[in-house]
Length: 328
Image (cartoon, rainbow, N blue to C red; front, side, top):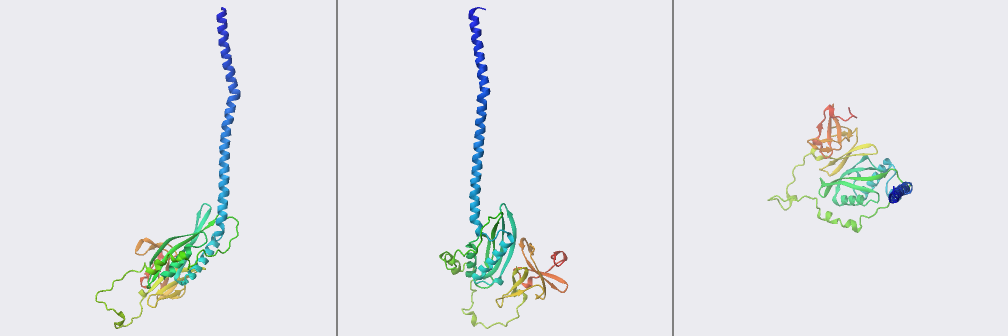
């Protein structure tokens, strides 16, 4: 081997040695440093996520603490009782008869972090007073929602039949806060209430009845027809209420324009009132609709049912398989 070959071999060996040394240094220092950088980035992302979740938690906690005083209670049963008392007060405040309204509690509906409770309200009254009731319920200072509102023409002139659901929340878990009776947000003589006067002044729900041709200008001048005793079709079941565990049947005398009350065990519709059945069943004659309640009476050995909204003439005989469990 000559001198030139020796120099060339030494040069190649030196390059190979440098490559081996750089690879070893990279394995010993560069790769661990890069792995540490990747771990640091992951840890920073996790820390940022934890900080964001912690901030959101405290924000949500402050929001719940602000909402908790506007709830009725931290348990479903007291919340149902207190909201029912408030609805009774609102009905009286609107100058409506409490006996003309049915208030049925709604079973708690569980949601993440809260339970939904409330009342299903049905009744009849003058249009102005019904608007006052709806306005007071909607503007209630408590945490609530008014839904499923339905208004139809009532039996008496200027009266309407109303049904709606008043729902509120029970927080679970509920922050430990002091709950006080909240004052009404708006009065019935407030400017916000007067914005609804157009509904009552124009009587939008009263149907227009055209005078028949040849009708006299003064109907009172016509000779009065002989008065006949009112039949069962003139008595309409307008409410099947339950308050403090005692059911009542409210019947509207369409002739005398007054409401009669009955309780189980009393004489009713030619028989004896046995109970009020609150099962949700298909409406007789229209199975696409649901009937939420009905009066059960006994005439002789047979049992009969009258749905809410029907007259006493619409009572139907029940088969043995249709009887509620309390009677079976």
